[in-house]
Image 1 (cartoon, rainbow, N blue to C red):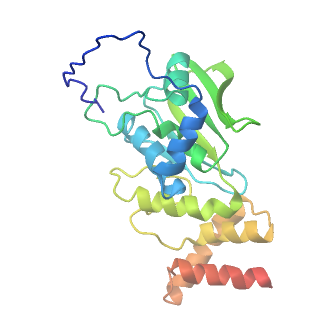
Image 2 (spheres, one colour):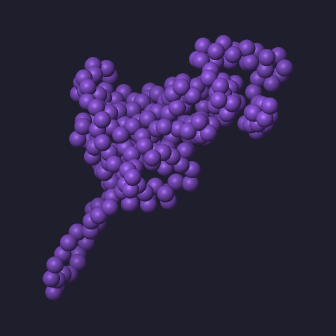
Amino acid sequence: MRLNNETVRSVGLGGVLTTSEFNISDGSKLIEMILDNAYSDPYRATVREICQNASEVDPAFRIHLPTPFEPWFAVIDDGGGMSREDTIRHASGIGSSTKDGDNTKVGGFGIGMKVPFTVSDQYTVISRHGGMSRTFSAYKDDHNRARFTMLSEVADDGPAGLEVRVPVRPENFRRIKDAVVSELRWFDPKPAANLISNMRTPTFSCTSRLLDLAVALQIDLSPRLLDAVEPAVSRLGRKSGRAQVNQQSGNRCLASMSRR
């Protein structure tokens, strides 16, 4: 978003001895202060901000929802990616944004790419650009200061783009899934996802509830087992007139099975 900085300012400076610009001595503290006070629901904010960024460069972006075997939320686009220098500047800087000077895009304050810090102390940014794939880690060090480090740089002849990958604890899988359904219901087209096919209304998913149950009971479920179980459970639901149940009923069922 292009900010309006065209206001004419006339300030008298008679008798001035010295002038200096305002500066930020601890950028990490400022980032933490902004993020802690800007979002009422950090999971919905994380989904919304990252997906909004991706949709503006690639409407056909994709998302990955956390599973017991791949416990992270990720947004992947093929929108061109960024160079090493641009990735460092925009992903770790304050006030630096890829949307500067563009009124067709939402945002522009350089905060959106830092929102994953509201749900995790570490997240990964992978930029594919100019025939190279560069992996960066954003993390908080032992003094709770935000850091941004490049971990690898390898040749990559695939499509250029960006991936933001955020670790998710098993107990928060459901929060991320519900946030995706809520925040992306108005996106058109809808992004491809590994677990959710209908993002218009929050519904009970047999597979996702089975994953939650597996986590609660510490049971390992292979993808093949999930693929086999989902159709069978769906058929039983249709026969009994209960193809979908609400979230509250699913939670009661999970709690009941967990106590056994």
